[in-house]
Length: 252
View 1 (cartoon, rainbow, N blue to C red):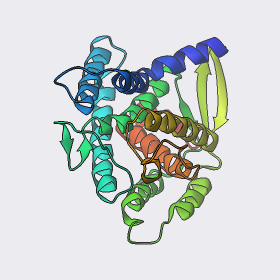
View 2 (cartoon, one colour):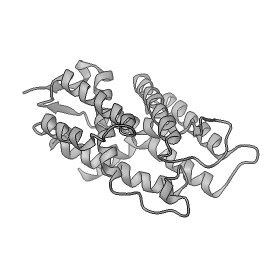
View 3 (cartoon, helix red, strand yellow):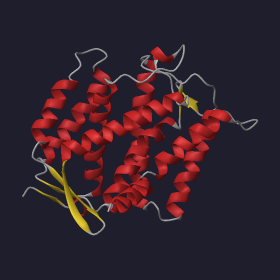
View 4 (cartoon, rainbow, N blue to C red):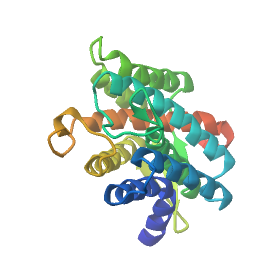
């Protein structure tokens, strides 16, 4: 059972692993005439083409990945210009101080969710009202922008998440058996792994936080709350894009 679960998770993580590989490879070697950020972008694009042609990814999943790339890039442009973090290296594919490959880091989260959803045959029970969950996702995304001028409502939003999802259960298939987990626990676990990935990414120079300008330090635990909120947005958007039939959602 554990081997089957690990194999399905590994297949679901192909695109995130490609990005890690690109960050690691370009950290230790370079290709003359191609800036690091540009090379990472080319690797990401090639990976998406390869995944589609090899049928590791469906056309519908590719559309979700590209949408998340745009959403993530918009957030990156805003955050970098607000001084939240920076991309110090040069590159032809930088716009407003942000390399285009950065959107794929958000897209890799969507890629994982789409792949895991399909491979683990996810079913959700006691899912909250669609209007409430969609409205909550919109508020969470808006707060990533507005907290620079208005009070940060992330903890209030986290409280709303708990209220909406505390009864929700996700059912998944491993080695022919159906297992269950509280949805909130799955949100937290995914956020934890993204936070760990963020530490590896900053160590490899994917981007730099202000307190890492003089040398790498561990990413603050407080970032977990941001990733927890981002996971909510990602899953709700993937759910909406998948449509009602393949969602296997039920309020029973």
